[in-house]
Image (cartoon, rainbow, N blue to C red):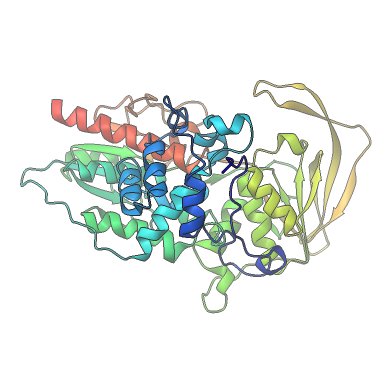
Length: 465
């Protein structure tokens, strides 16, 4: 049989149905589709796909096991490297990582590595197997992990497997970080996937302390000097919203994407009044930005009842930083993309509520330092877009609370912690950091990769201490 140059399509809810519910959009491969997709793998003598995986999964080996219908072997192989496979199979930008290097991508479409990872993880999760707890030595050393997001969870999982007693301190009332507060239910189910993955870590022996703001409850120095922790990993992410600093951003009806998504995802506003968190979404919503967070906010607004949702982005289609899949899903659901437009003012009514967003048309000039063409305003092209809600999704920065209470730990001009990219070691002995708090806002899998590297470095540090 001739080798197919196309991936097997992912079964999905129909756009006209899913635009009105919060159930997962992508439905996952069944066994037969997974095996057929695995059979597309060429099993190259020198596989290139592995170098694109930040956590180093043995991709050819786990795919070979799916091909052989050894599904238990496949997930066991994945879990040698990844603590959160059901999550990564859903939200990692595989097309820019492992699949980018797949030889098949030269002539057609890469093997659907992410979909196969999700299949293996979901199949195991459905079986509800008990997790083997780790038996710690009496004199096992203690490590504190600050932040229960992807970096912290990955670091904690690896350290627990190495025999360390790990306590995660999480500021919010639910673990997961961006997995819980940022990524919507329709892309990443919380009960079925996120909570299950985290409960597996707890079953191994990882302790999670919620509602624990490090910098207030304890400082890093107090954790090490008074609470008996031998090392600390800081994985507090990038949860501080950014605004454009244009007139009208203080009007009623303007949200940061952080607030908008947190209220909806973590605080269950989409189930109001069953959950006591209201969220106001008007008839017309403008989401400013072009990344995954902007797509999440726009698609969430639609599901909350908005009649018309715009994406307002200052560059063009080619420059959209969001995953292609998310852009296509948003378009299929009816999101209106107003590209090459940049807001210059949020316009309010006489009662202080948003009534429009004033934009100026843009044109693309020469490439900037990032390689993307720089947008330039077209003089005299301002126009008003009538909306009653605006969501700013233009990025986020680091919360300064840990860094500001930790003398001896260097930060850069943006407030990110300075850490060795290979080890996560900071300028303060025994303190390591990784993920968005170091790099700025990035992806789940890159944060996990940083957590894994830091776990290996902490292990080395404590063995030699």
